Length: 102
Image 1 (cartoon, rainbow, N blue to C red):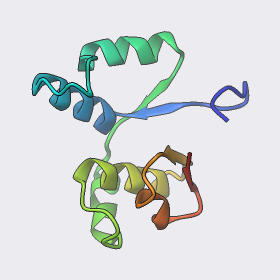
Image 2 (cartoon, helix red, strand yellow):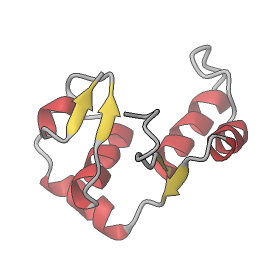
Image 3 (cartoon, rainbow, N blue to C red):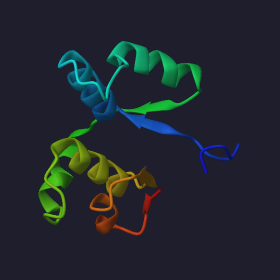
């Protein structure tokens, strides 16, 4: 799906925020800084999705499948827009059939 020329790939501002936090904490699982991530995503032609007030408000309506605030805002964004969300997290996939576990 990502490689399809018909697909538009969106990266949430929340994703950049999470990358920046993990990198600043020196976590070994995040060797890329937030600024580097922005550059890499831009160079790849990806688009950025801001966190809008409607996204934040939609978190309130989500079932309690997942408790991570970054993952919950990504789910809310996908449902509000609507967009497909690709994830490795099986808990996120519980929210909707538009959330694709890969």
